[in-house]
Image (tube, rainbow, N blue to C red; front, side):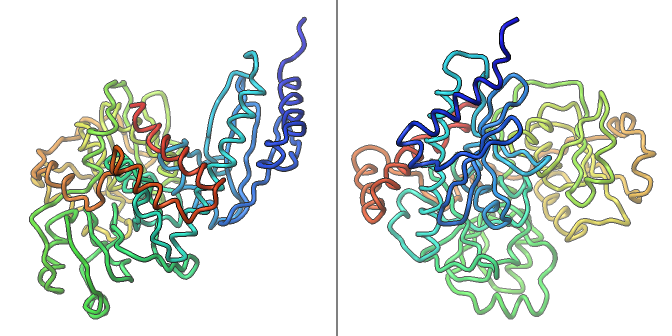
Amino acid sequence: MSPNPEPRVLSRLRGYSLWNRKARLLLGQPTAGDHSITWHITTEVGEVDLVARLSGSNLRLECASEDALVARSLRAMLVTKAALVAEPEEHHVLTDISAASRGAARELMRHAMYWAEAVTSMAHREQEIHRGSTSLQNVVAQGIWYDRRPNFGDAVGPWLVTALTGKDVVNVRRTRETPTKARGRATLLVGSIIQMINRNNVDIWGSGLMRALSVEQVTAFSRLKNIRVRAVRGRLTAAELREKLGWEVPEIYGDPALLLPRHFPVTSRGEHIAVVPHLKHRAAMRELANERLVVSDVREDLETVVTQIASAQACISTSLHGIIVAQAYGVPWVWLNLTDSPVDGRDFKFDDFFTTIDAAAVSRLDVPLSEVTRLDFIELAQQTTLPDLRTDLDRLETALPVRRETSGAAGTEARERGLSSVPARLARGIRRLLSRSSRRIRSH
């Protein structure tokens, strides 16, 4: 019997890590674990772990952090570059290589060195923007989105900006945990997040309100300067902004997630029914999964969840973005409204989106959470509908204020100007990163 290749490939990988001078410089001392090797990478946002582990017959490279704020930065950095996996611990899958293939250890070592340099470069770039530098604005977009916890719907905004412009996106949302001195304009992205605006110089693109504006919010928003509305999710949001704030709101409506099929086509259709619980309903509904029901975990990678919905026969969702993605891909859906466990915003944000479709054709079932496990989901799938879309997606896409990265000689000159203040090794990493920034997007 031939020797088990698993211990040998890890032994070789550990050897390369110790013997290779560049590996020692980029990765530091490896730590051996149970069928894994970990390198602790120090970056400007905090410590990041690169983990090589045996996963079945594959040698896998993962990226993670035990620090919640660093994990938030990683989600933004890697949204278009690596698949996010929620369990057992949140991590990003950077690459998979057959453990039995010739040269597997050497190949994974190359990937580990690349990613160590890339993550270090991205962290430096993020911190440069948060320190107020404008030198990278030719190659990086400034966005605002909710990122306190992983959620595929929140990832739609930065994912689309990269797809549409070729630029990576740094989240310049200002919070107590993440103060920022970022300068210049920022684009408010996907979600019920308009109420989160707490800085000047913001463009609103397809965002919505969580609920009607309060007197306190009207007072606070009236002090803001240079807020430009490019598009909003729906007509209820538009009415609130026009009537209570006097803001100019163009007749451009729609959640940008409706644009996903243009940039992430899913052509296959399975036999399953997609069940998409809102994050607060996940624990109560995850046991519903069976051979016909695929229960999505909204904490997972955007492309994973979107594929589960887009390839389904029908979608049953308590999550607004579950509904929007189903609508976008032409999958009939029903809104499962859990009356005793409403999502934030209750009906407002759903009704806001429904102003962009034929609201009379919306299928909705109101039940308490306690009855969910007794529902016949196969029968419920027969009640799904696909309302007509009543908005102009071309206008919505064109409304994005972030311009595509300049190509050709002018683009190269602008990029080099932007990188002129960055340390040489980090600049090399950023250049390499920019050349791959849309790798996952282009592959589709």
